[in-house]
Length: 314
Length: 308
Image (cartoon, rainbow over all chains, first blue to last red; front, side, top):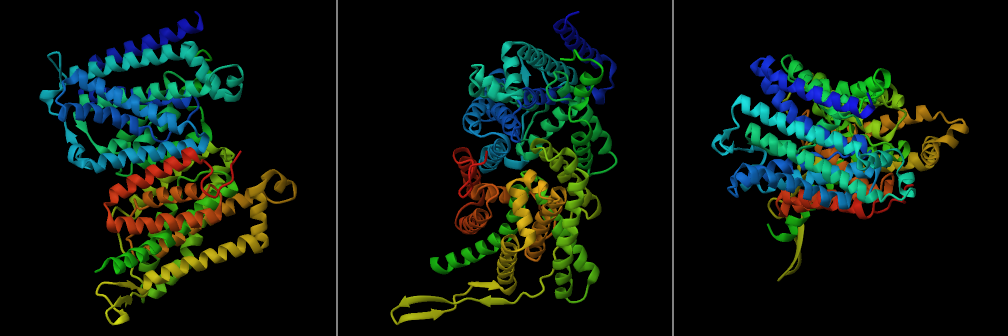
């Protein structure tokens, strides 16, 4: 089998597995996996920018929050139904990514991280400032009556799982396709050697901006899906912690691999889930994992697998 | 109160904020200047300083001044040692690679913060100030009777806050003398300029890095010991100083020490004054956004030289 065929087969197998899990897993884990798939979309968005383009943003929570609030405010303030509100969320995140990218991509390296961090902090504070509409830290709940899509009630466990599954599948296959296309190859070229990519005649600035917008759109989809499926919109999703989470997931799973983000989210989710039943200081585990990762497996789980066992891993 | 005395009160509060900020930011700036790494865990060293100050003062008991003096001496050293240990154990092994160091220090941030939560707990605890007399301040006015001095009600500052301002000035002056006049300073500056050449001339660059990392954390801890009689010690208190210190270091120019001092004064004073007169959230939004814009259009900061 060719490399591309192998990776396509792998992706379809993963989707089939996720589909089948619904019928096997007990109710609690079905709920957990709905959440994991939504968060994995966020991680994939981050991976496109960090793993493939080599740009480390510490402010991705602002795109997640833009999607979430675009959707939430669309429903609560503008009185939209699910589909237009979802679209509003995606557009809000993409436009924000375009503006932030236009400004922040003038910088590189450490400055880029700090600028994105600052912009995210501004977004967080803006959400708090307009507490009248956003209800600040407290957040607001989207009534289950408003979470109906073409007659399907999205609050039931089954509908929630399969909605998350469909959204995840679209984003997963889209991301996989994207990096097989010339566009994806050029992003990798920029990551490996931006100077050389520019010499070869690629307009690297425009590619970086496009990568950021796609990455922001993915994060926005994740944010809007989260609000849609779990019915809650809150400022805590735009804090620094939610910018660090995708970094953690992607590093853990393997930056620059298609399956890394999903693996990272699953691993981290259950790590925190299990450890929080023992201690309230569960973020300690996250800290230790981060340090151990930078020391011993800078390429993450999937990255290490690719290096050691399956060199064809996408 | 009239506008004049009100403004003076706000400026004094601003000066206290600046004093703490300049120490914290100076730590971050030195670390970035010499080692070229961003220490995201810096705020947690600040928090550790405050928490240890509480531990030292409560274990010693007695007059608050004894405990405070002991904390002032031991805590920065202790925190400095912890930081140097972290540098040895972790940062050295990732070769101070900028990206990986940031990730590793985010990890250290969570480890320190959550360990504090597990041991010290989620409460905010106060430390008693060694002296805390309230000093009334005079205000003058050109009235009908010509120039006169009077003491408006409410215009006062505690002696401790004045002490904080003086202490920050003393520490900064000492630091400046050490950096410019002693051999230690020379070694640090040599490492900053070109670590390879410094190594070739027999400077143990690895050791210098550990010392510098410890020194940076120690300065943050010192700022925290000074602030803890004004603000209580809490395990999440490291977030705001980190962000503010970042802002200061960036505005001042990454690695430029005079720039850091100027920016700390600018940010601290405006923070004090703006939050007296305007909504604090709006002030923060404007400040954060402006900082991002400074970095976008002038990545080297106000006084920084352009970095390659």
